[in-house]
Image (cartoon, rainbow, N blue to C red; front, side, top):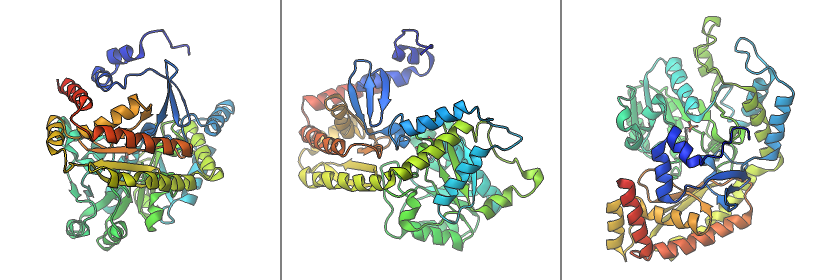
Length: 449
Ligand SMILES: Cc1ncc(COP(=O)(O)O)c(C=O)c1O
């Protein structure tokens, strides 16, 4: 590539973008130079191959560099499509909107394109306020909806809000899976939107039976719009095209993003009930009340159309469901095998394992937790990466939860290899304190400094 100048990418990144991020990678030993990606694999400059189960935080539902999507992008470039007209319309946005609406819950009738998940959430917040004439917004505790000021106000997670306050007024949170608390919060009939992830990304928490259906019913009763944030769960992640399908939900508002473009092009959308959207865009004068220069753009639209086509033709949503079941079948026995494994849970290709204090080895566990909450999960993630060449993540700040979001195109044998590697690594990590734990303690001390 013409831009390559032979300098060390980490040093360049540290000098020009974010030195602390590079330091953190170094401490974790994750400071590889990545040179190529292909489906479920990443390759470093030493030619080593890693299994990527983090999937770019879920955007590589079809793996990295899917050839079908690439071909669609090349075709769009070669056709010299008009690009964004701003004062005019071209073909591709309407086509993708039509395909999205054909697959989304029947309640939804309009699509507003964006370039990311957080922008889709911002659109949900703004349009909901304007459509209802109410200003309050409710979300669930421990939710994650993005990091711009509006979506951050809905997160409310201290690890992210830190020095960025004050957050927007009118935002409150209720515990996830608590319908009584939700009803109490809605009773004042002043809430514009209740926004909820069908499966919470932070910690991978599944809804209790009846929770989401009950939340929808309460929203209807109190005149609040029901928003289902499908940014992470959308496009097959949980084994149905949208997670809403598991519970037959009919949202009024539905932000999506991540896998929409197969990870190639920044892309997102917020889908609305037509009546809600039309209340805000209600006259020619109000035709451009919300939008963004880059959205919709033709490359994102072409990639989106190709993603939906690939999901359909290769039956990848079904594959996400089947592989998810296989993964649970392989990993649930770990709950019995190790005291330190508190729970294994997942839906489709969204999976997590949670660790908690074991009966035997309490002192070591507490020592680790005191040093840094969530350190045990790091004890697992580190060796998975270094010894087994498998990339995974912790499911949120200070959580002892390891999470994966694999592509649906992953080979079944690689799911099996992950389950075996996990078993081996937990067996070692559960024997703390060992040389292993000491290494982690050293690393965390380093991080804290
Ligand atoms: C449920 C949910 N909503 C919103 C977002 C924000 O998306 P983005 O990172 O594209 O801004 C995320 C990102 O992880 C998410 O998981």
